Length: 135
Image (cartoon, rainbow, N blue to C red; front, side):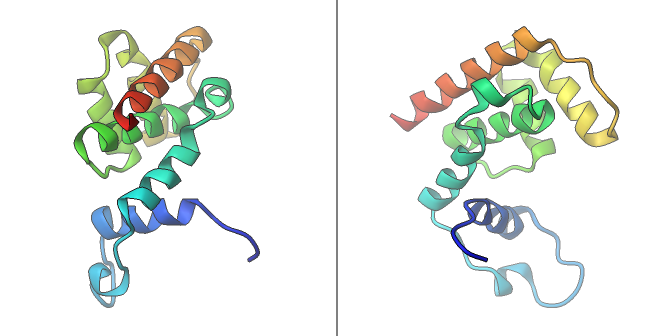
């Protein structure tokens, strides 16, 4: 592989904190920790263009926005499912249906009809909230 893969920091962090060992050595004996800066850089890279890209992959972006805000606000390292559940409880109610739809689609692979305006508004709101936590 040539170049860099910013996703690796997020993948390794999720494995380290949320993974389940199926066979062999304990996860924490195999993987080291990733710095907070590298982890945030990785998850931020996934959602930085969310306002314009949300309809390209709504389920992924909606749930990842929840994960990133949960990390910046509370230091939580969450799966997409956990991030969505966190978002339902911590994001304004007007976005709850959108997050529930994303969770349903993620967990069941059923297709969802998205409210495009609400999705763009949600993405803009979440990016603003994340940026507030950075500054």
